[in-house]
Length: 231
Ligand code: SAH
Image 1 (cartoon, rainbow, N blue to C red):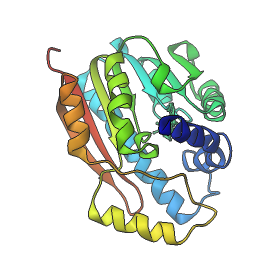
Image 2: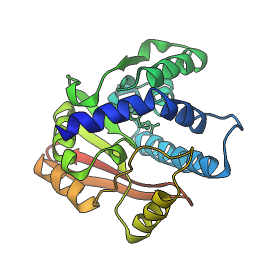
Image 3: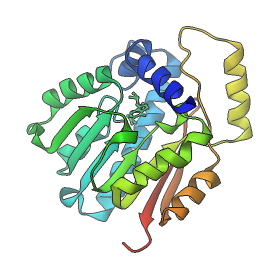
Image 4: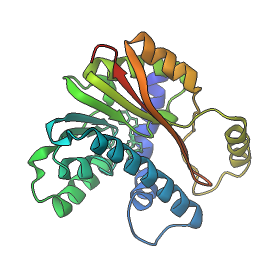
C-alpha cells in the first residue's frame, strides 16, 4: 500500500506547490534563489550529458524514446527537436500542461512528441530507449525493483536512469535539511545505493555501458546507461 501512498503524495505535490517550484527551476527566468539556480544548472548538466551520449551514437533520428516522468519536457523537447520520436508522460497533469506549452513554443513540428498524463508504472508499449531522470528520488528503495522492472520491460535496447546516490555527505546534507523545514522544502527525498540499482538492471538482462556522477553544490545525480546484453 506504501506505493500508492508515495505516488499520491508525489502526484499531489507536482500538481501544487511542487509544480510552481520546479516549473521555475526548470525554466530560464530569474525568479529563483541561488540554491535553486545551482539545482537548475546541475539538472541541465544531466540533460546535456544524456543528449551528448545519444548524439555520440549518431542515430537519434531512428530512435523511439519513452521519457518516463518527463516533467516540463526539459529532455523530451530537445530530443524531439533532434529528430527522435518521443513518447513522454508524467503523473502530474500540470507538468504535462507546461511541457505542452513549451513544446508548442519551441518545436517547429510537435508531431514527434506525444505528451500524456500517465504514471510510469502503467505505461505500456515498447521503445528503443527508455529514459527516467530524477524521478526515483521520490520513491523509497523498496519500490525500485517494481519500478525498474516495469521500465526495463518497456525498453527494447536501452535504459537511461538518474538518481540521487547514497553517500555519507548527502545523508548529512539531507539530515541538516530536515532540521530546517521551510517554504522551499520538497517531498521526501530518497537516496539509492548504486549497486542496488545495477543489481536489479543486471537481473533484468542489462549491462552498464556508460555512467557519470553529476554534481554541483546542491544537485547530485548519478546517471547511468544500461543496454540489453543481446543488443
Ligand atoms: N525527468 C524530468 C522531471 C524530473 S522532476 C527532468 O529531468 O526534467 C520529477 C518528475 O517525475 C515530476 O514531474 C513528477 O510529476 C514525475 N513523477 C513522479 N512520480 C511519477 C510516476 N510514478 N510516474 C510518472 N511520473 C512521475
